[in-house]
Every structure is written in C-alpha cells, then in structure tokens.
Image (cartoon, rainbow, N blue to C red; front, side):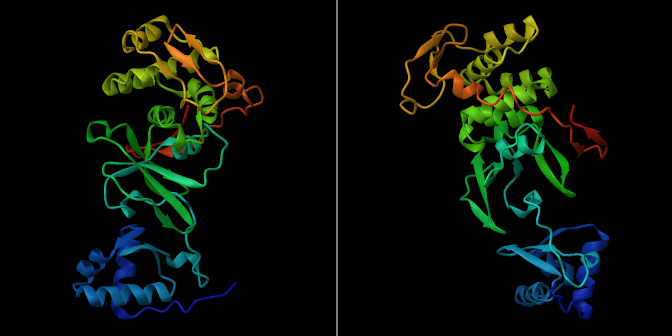
Length: 295
C-alpha cells in the first residue's frame, strides 16, 4: 500500500494535536482559521497541505475529516457512510431506511443515505455516496438520539421514529413492501408508549391508518388500549389508498377497520416475511453515555 509523507509544520502540528486532544473528527475551515488565528486564505492553504500530506480528508467545500496518527503512514481514512451530522450545516439526523438498517430492521442495502433536515437542501455526494435530505417541519424535529455508528458519534432517529418515518415516506426506505417487512421485524423491539406519543404529536390520520393496517396484516398482537388509542387518531370517513394510485394493476378492496383502500397485492407486502432472519440487537451509545442493546 502506498504511503504518504505525513510531515507537519509547527503550525500544522498545533492544529492536529488540538483536534486529536479534543477527539474532534470533523473540522470546518472557519474553525481552522479561528484555532490558528490566521486569515481565511492562510487557513485554506494549511488545509490544502494537510489534505495533500494525509492528515485531513476533504468531505465537501470547507469541511474536512481528521485522519489521526494511529492510521499510520498509509493514512487510511474512515469509510463509514455515517458521517458526523455536523458535516452538514443545518440540523440533521439519520432516519428512514438508513436508521432502520442501523437498528437491524432491514437487510436491504440502500444506495443512498437518508437524513431528516430542518431546512430544504439538495442531495450531496460525498465519498461516492449520495446523501438525501428529507424536509421535516421544526415542530416534528424530535425523537432522535446520539449513537455511535462504526465508532462515529452521530444523531440517529430513535427506533420508533425511524419506523414511522419509513412508513410515512416509503421511497426513502426501499418501497412499501420493504416497509411492511421493517414493521414486522421491528415491532417486538419498539416502545409502544413512545410510538403513541409521536403519533399523537404528529396528528396524521393516514399514518395511523397505514400502521394499523400493517399491524393486522402481520397478525401482530397489540393491547386493546393501544388499538383504541390508534382508532381515536383516525379521522372519520378518511378513506385513503395504501400506496400510489395506478402503480399496481389490481382490484381494490376497502379495509373497513382502518379505512384503507388496498391497491397493492397482499402477496407483495408479505413476500419474504416467512424466512425473515431474526432480529439481532446492536450496541448503541446513548446521550447519557451508556452502552445499551436495542431490545
């Protein structure tokens, strides 16, 4: 493997030592300028040299990731798709299919990385990966936590939030058939109280109706009180299609329990669930700093 000339000038060493001492993996150009008390042009030149000598990796304009000394002369950079969320300017957190994959709710490998964002942003390509941002209203910017993904501290939707996000926008989680499997696998590990709290805050009847439909589709047993709470969140006579109209050439059937017009074959939604692998807990680092299993 090709090695790099990982030398450091005095001023460059000050920056790298400061980043390593404080355990800071991501640094912005403005921070380099402030830490070293230099002009913007000088900071840009220092960053250029550090990238060239294998101490920093450029992620996007003005944002760099530290390649610590422990990576040796080869300067092997971190290739995890889970970039620290401070790489992106606006508040963001990982959710949808990406978070469901992290928690072990799906085996699907997504070509794109999905994040919730408080502001509208165009997709970004970093290290050959496409990062897609789904706009989320400020009032619903909640239910996420700090976890460690491949050793990188990131903001991740809670399991309950991840599943609801995937159900609300299936295009960010594969498709509705994959969401169906996600719900089946994830359900035993979800906190029903937290799930209900989110649904009550969001007040989206269609989301509740689809969730109720999949609960019954998979024969999931839920407490009568929980079902009653779900039913209260459904608007009367609010008939909705299960998926986009016209995609499936199939006869429609009205599910009277949840007022769902079933316009996708149940065989598609149940495909592969019989042989779905068991859930495997993952260790996460919570905001309290405790390592817990997702149970």
